[in-house]
Amino acid sequence: MRSLVFGPMPLRATPESHLAAGPWCFAGQEENFPGWDGDPGKQGRFPLPPDPYPTGDDVATAARSANAEVVRLARYFGEQGNKIHGRSLSDAFWLTFLGPHLLLCTHMLLERQQRVLDLIALYGAMPLRVDILPPDIPFSFADSRDFMLRGVQDTRFNHYIYSRMLESLAPAAWQLIVLPAQAPRTAAPRHKTPARARWRERLGRLLRDLPFPRYKGFSLWQSCLLSLAVLSNGRKRDERGLDFSAYCGEPPVWRFAAEEMI
Image (tube, rainbow, N blue to C red; front, side, top):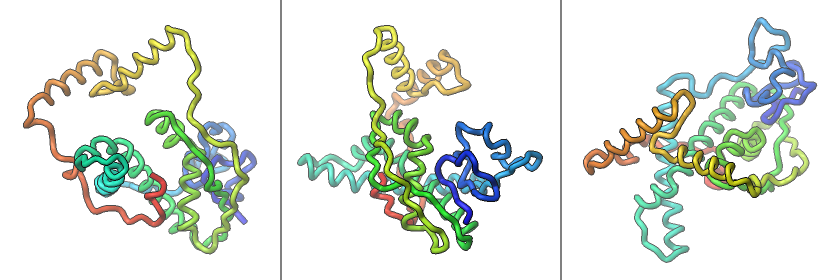
């Protein structure tokens, strides 16, 4: 029985014995699989599933769908927060407060769900072994940046997300094998650092908090100049932009318990 891999590709895997759920299966070990990228001119070619959003219109539709879920969840969690803290804060407050995290989570989950559905359409009738991670892995993250680096962009965390989806979506032909429990994934420890390193960390945090953060391809002065432009343009009350709901479309249809993953 062939295996469909959602985590790291086993070192002895071959295209005849293993299928890759996506290119992340080869992250950090590309040299061990010279044909991982599907180049027909290379030996050991691994077939990769198609892009879940092949056109710009597909990306835009999915983004607007995820945005609609952000609005719904912000309202839902806001109601719970008001009850817990005895407050009556507005939906606009909770959307501003929770929006960045919910936006990251919903866009990630919707994209991951689409990949699973595409794989089912591609391999659903094929008998496959699929290794999944157990549900009781207590992930924790220090902040949003830590969540992005060691969550959204981490192979193991994504394997965990795919595992929860597969529990609900896997076709009958697939055999789900729960892997042994692993050590908990906790937030990165904060060690005492020298004063110079602390100042560099604070400076880096300030640069990331700019209205126009420094991304690859932009120099420091360009980032500062663009940040000043954003700040000066936002001082007028009538130029604050559209309400977030203007960027929403039809809400997504979740095929698994997405709310439990946020």
